[in-house]
Image (cartoon, rainbow, N blue to C red; front, top):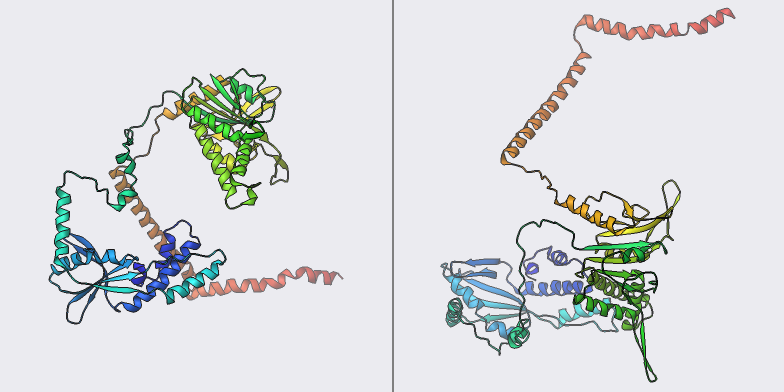
Length: 526
């Protein structure tokens, strides 16, 4: 509002640029600002000084508008985009402005507040956006008026303010004023009244960590059925398997089935969704009241489907398309936030397992169809989960050998955040996977040389740049000179040279009939 009153042509654009994205509410607010600012300008003096700074060792203030009168006195205006007129009329602000401004040797004649009303109109359910904006414009032009209120100077306001500032600077005790309306909504109220403790956050020491061993591993394994994914996860130390498909007959690790739980009490049947069961186990695992070292989630895509069904019931829909602007985001947020809790669990190993999707082909530049391999889950979700783990691995069976592949190609989803991953694949073996982590840890601790620039190097570099620029300028200056020499060779004033030049020009003309001798010879033979 202040920018518009100061006749800043880019004020509305600056308002829009202060938000990452704008919506209808921002545009409606811009309409209000633009129309109300025009009303303000119609009432204010044509000329004045804006944002005048009052500053000395005791006080700093900013006068919104300072207008000089014909008699040499000044009027002070302060803009308030508010409906709380009575509260501002009790304020000491303008009294302080007059007091400190007159200490500069000038006189203040009038103190004035300019009250710009806040508009609380809301769009009706039966209105379109266009209809609401038209009604908004009509209401601003007709029903909302700018009010200018004169304030009578009271020196006691200045004394009260200075006394209060003195008491605050000298205070050693701060008793609670429970009658203060701000206390009712204070975020610290429960800490004082209920005695809740406040856990202070302590920042770590500004010192790089020396990584001596890998304490946590997080990986996402995917592959075709019957490739040994679950069996491989069973090799990890002290595993707990959160299983969705029930295929755990050939592993000896403890298993928790993630499925719907149906209970019947008399004629009443209640259902607990598999997603709720999964979240309850995550709550229990976060307590760390167990001796497991590895948590295995098998399968991730089944959990995503369970999450969808749970959210359908919660939102009262049958599919995400029933509420396309909300449901997709609700489901994805619910799933990813819970999976982030899983990957943040404080256990040595977090293993996520998925099936492989190889149903999509891509066409290469040469025209060949290439099969892509990726986890059997939505691409947006897959990218998010990949960012939560250290490695994304694909299990492949080649010549009856089970291989764990880390590589990322145009046809294979994979990769990881381990530094200097020296191998693209290993045998499907836990010990070899541990070696991959340990090797990456050694590479991480290697000192990396960084280029450092000294002041002397900077000076030397600048002199080298200057020398290069000088040589370039000299070469540019010499280029036209060489061209001039070439041109000078053509117009020569020496008569002997001119004659030789004429001879050279006439020679090709004399040689033309000689080239036709073959034709004349043929005629003579005939």
